[in-house]
Length: 385
Image (cartoon, rainbow, N blue to C red; front, top):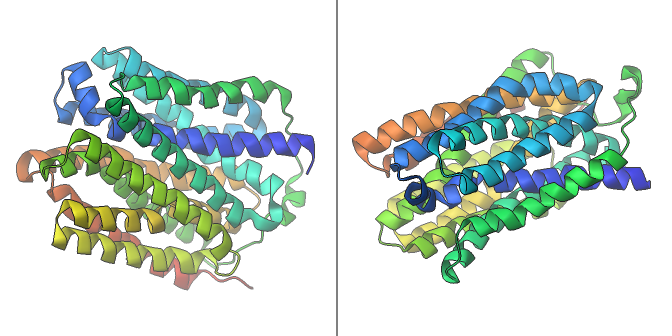
């Protein structure tokens, strides 16, 4: 591997890591943000909605721009992610925090477009596995911020020290980007970058993958935002609730690492369908048991099989549209990110009317939807012509 490709790989994987940090930012520090801003839970949750709105409004446009000049897109996106990571914790003014979240969503669009593009160039023979490795780092980022915030509680330091420490990864990216090259290649040459997937209904499959991504983003949003708060309602401490979120993210990492190997044996379509079904069963079992000990088992199982699904969805879509990888991934992410807008609105109303437990029922409904649509995608696609 050339030195420049090593830099591209580092930037892609580092972006996955920092994206994992960002996506768990509010959920892992929810009670601290409520105290810091002096606002109720329902208001702080709207930060997630602002983040999702910024991502949804920008991701398709960012995908188009990334096709022309990915390095500039990556630099701007990373800078905006740092604004969110540091601004929401260090400037405790509600509307400034809201604006930082919106800008962070725009920055997150860079991950949707850039990571598949870079990894398809650097790892053409093991594209799906490299995406799974990226998802492992995404999960590691979520684990890192959850564990570090739990550690800050333990050693009696402000929770936002964790944000400052993790921002160093983003700083390293901003330093490296100017020294990394990207060379555009002709469309015809892109045929060999990834193994194609075939369907007679490409547009329909892309839309269905968007629906699956919508369900996936909604599920991750709901679990990441309310898992720790729900554990507190069952009698768990703030420290215990932070750690269960950390364990959940740790198993996302473990699952993604193991699926690097599994994806060399099984195709993405099979993994998407099987994992969706297993997650539905595991979460239903946890809800039936409904105890802290039960969730310490069911949430990690959910994380193990859930974490890899975003990269699986993107892998299927970009293999269908292998000549337009950044645009295809951005299209799917655009539909998916609508779930990040929709879910905070729905869950805040559910909590107000039915209590926080109702969020878990909402997640199960989404998992059933994801499983059914994944089955349709499986039927409509094939590995060979």
